Image (cartoon, rainbow, N blue to C red; front, top):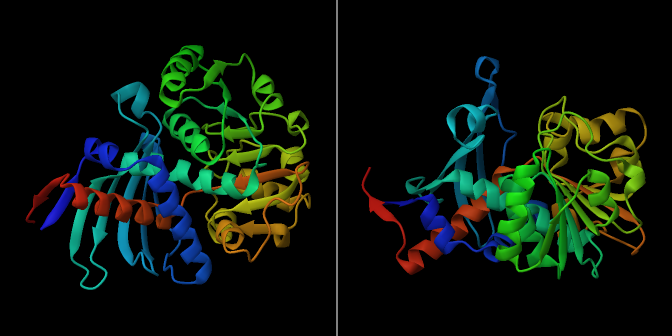
Length: 331
């Protein structure tokens, strides 16, 4: 029997804290060498302004989870079809037999696990006394990221910006109530950055969304968007100012092209050195240092990995099974 979990099922059983714990363990196993995860292939469809990718992974250790996510990114979906731009489906398999054990809605998994990944990085890289967070981009990821930041730091205030003021207003009303903190709109990204201990960029911008000079000493930056080779969210100054740069996986960031604008371009200019870039799992396991002082700027760049999906999905599956949530079917 295969357990089918809808978005509503996942929202009911998978709190952000559980997702953060699962993703952290996934990256720990990655650093310990128990994860099997090939670089993801892409099928680009310029005709429809979209792409499809397949993301398989096995996460070892006690997690012992095997699965794959099929995900599409179609930029015109929100405006033309009233659909999210990212749509995914996750299939979990029994690691002993290969038989499918669960099929679940992957768009919610993607939204939660991406924010959980940034939260894990924030846990190790942001100042312990960080109390303010700036969100640039008020979409789905902007929402889950604010929730995730509140799980790893005692956030008291969020300042947010979006190119569409009506989105920003709606976001502030919704997230103030959901997170029980003061969430206020900003007129410019400069206002966001200058007043935040933690800055999160979750946009589809093709060019940097703020200037590195605006960052205060001790700020931590989570650069989450910019997944295309020609897209950037952070500028050269930000990359150069960062005393510690951490990525989810060097191979994905440097070779898949997802991090080209934010990381590869500064590398090509000699502004940063590849040897100075750490992977998140290395920081979690203590193989490499995270933040060293309260005054340094830190940067986390993520392009999203299959291990995050599988780690989150196995956690959701176990929670759903324990609570009797979902529908069991025979294929």
